[in-house]
Length: 576
Image (cartoon, rainbow, N blue to C red; front, side):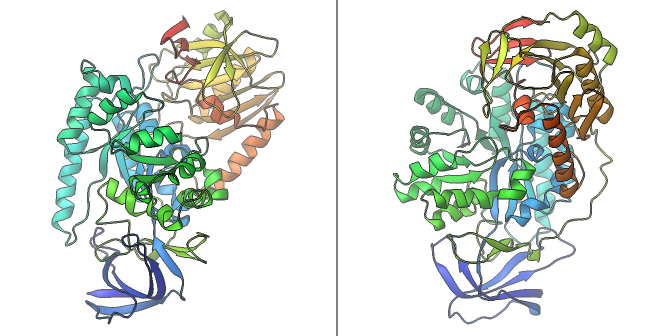
């Protein structure tokens, strides 16, 4: 057996809370078996006598640095980075080795093809992606989307993953988790979970239980009585916990709480402050996640490393904060024989720190015992990559005949909830165009709170959760040109001001690019400069705000291709 040895380092042990000195460990590299490649064979700490299990071919001196296990993001949507999984090496550079990813955005657009696309593409990723099957596609019956995931699709995905896992396990001497599918993605339909007559979701839950899959939750502001039944249905984790009271409700009922530190959702400060008032062992029921985090935030602030630093800043013991990003999520998702610690049989994915645990400054990251490098991209050829079935002429006709009357959607800066307002002289036109069925059905309304210069419009195909084309503008001409730009580019972002049209293309499902991070960052910078030139504010993220103006499960008013919808009464204010 050919081994590489890492030596002369200190090690944080999440099992015992110890910092071991004089650490030495060996790593097996295999070109023929990916599940054996990068596994730790031997570990010696302190004054233990070393005796390696094979021939040492190379030795790495870590110069006395402290090392910790690499991180696990316990709930995220890769689509929010605007990158394909294979392009997310930036996450690994910030210490993340594993992502539990819910691809419900791409699946809403492409159906099961979108899920399969991520499975295929992530094979070429440095980060180990384990996927949950989207539970709510379509999210609601009040809009048109491109996919549908029912119990039969769920069953097929689990069965195929089980078959593939068994084949991989036959050739692996280690007792690891070879499954790529971790369970069921966030169950947003709390009502359907509690209602035994809601056959669609109940059958999906049934198939997940049969496959012994993890069931991930999404339960904001639910009552204790509903939470009891929700957990009783098998839901194990929740990332929509935002207050100390909600934290206590979930922990006392055995739920694992995933503390979100994303771009819009930043629950780390409040929940980590609250954890200080619980017995220390309560941290064993918590993990960190990003949910939705923009690529520029990742580059500037970090990924899971940022979440851990936030936890430490808000009073967590550094040992607990690191454990919440390593061993805890590994145990929650049955990955403890692969990740979560530097231990024999586990994968040698770890971070070398510059200083002490409390600083959490990463110097170098190793994934499978190798320093992080960008993989060679592979072409995507076997799956449908987009849907853009729109007639501009049909959209023009509907726009010209539309009556833009109140009420208007009232935007609240830095929030995804809205209010119902009266129209005013600054109200803009808003439309949502079905890009899937070929009917180009267009919903319309007025919106307050988004600012643009005269003869300007913005458009996006990032429009949760169905990702139709959403456009806001003050003239029909600007609106049509923005939509034309979306159709021509295959989706993304567009801003129109007078004769100038600027597009940030996201041709994969209208949500992502296969460009390198550096290229995407430059395109984002250029787009935002043109967005400001068109009169948009820089006080909040206008495009991210726009992307949530179509989500009919979040109050108050939202627009879909079928009309203006009141999420509190669950009825259309006016429909097509």
